[in-house]
Image (cartoon, rainbow, N blue to C red; front, top):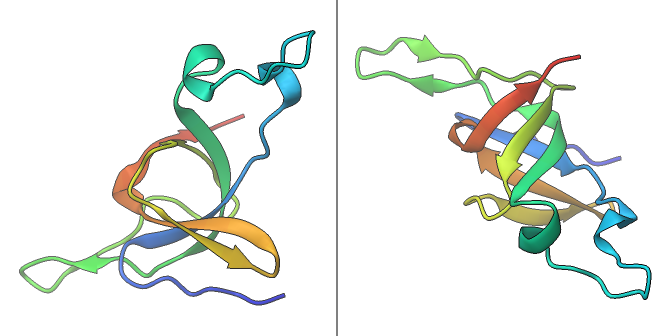
Length: 101
């Protein structure tokens, strides 16, 4: 499998597949905003090293590989096909929450 190594504060996220709950009994698929909201969930698969402050100190990324995160589905992230699967490259600033068990 190929691997992406994001730079600076960027992370690579594998989106969690949507469940079929957005489909009515008659088979009509409802838009995300109608039924499930605009948040998406995904698993962090790769993390950059962080950003440097104006003083030269390294500010580390606040998420780790394997973290399950929530992010806005219309975030500024960029989709990319990695070995046939869609992943999203985004800034750590677009992460709204880490899901803890």
